[in-house]
Image (cartoon, rainbow, N blue to C red; front, side):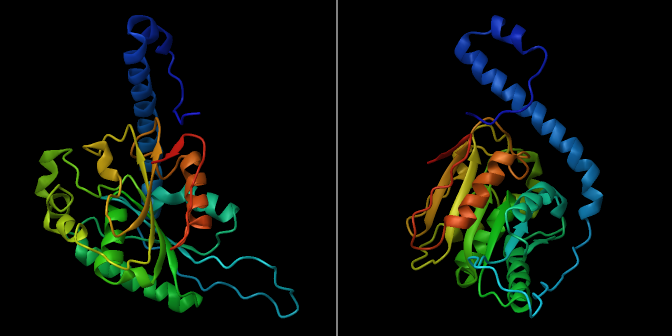
Length: 286
């Protein structure tokens, strides 16, 4: 079953007017666009709540007379938002993770004025070191949306972050660069997301012995990825899986329940040296 948005009242008319194959593609695009607009409107309401950095808390230790539950140790999860966004984009994903036993979840806000992926990756590294110090965990899992995934990948590949990041999940991240919206080139960090940029050339270099496991979710209707396959990881030295999501757009990736299920499965089963296959409705491992 493919992941799609809410139905529109004029879809039956579109089916009659368009050839079946073209109609199917157009209808999927209309549904995905409608869902993107709805998500954008909802996110605009939540955006102010995520402008400030979240409060850092130390996990509560169980009472001495409480018997420990026989649970598998799970590293903390770090969420990293995309370009000109903030941690509010992960409200639903955080809830999903918490409902399934992931209670050590933190988000990092980086400034919309950030002009360099390298500098943002260094900030992420300091943030992760702080989390490991507070929680006593030697590793974390990271989920990065769009630019956030690229920042996290740079930290892992180029700054020694594979020692700290067990699993990196990226959502609609332009791993090979995107050509969309050329007018946005005025922003330096957008230029770094273009094919052939110095940052992307660094990420294409050999990375022997990288310990992090990568899972990349990409959508066949992501309007910010040009070409669409740029959201896939293709590197001979990286242990990576690419998961195709059908029928939803860029903004839906961090909020759609099917993607959240796939993310949970990736975090629960993926680790260096193992074969993990995140599956959910609408997801296909590529």
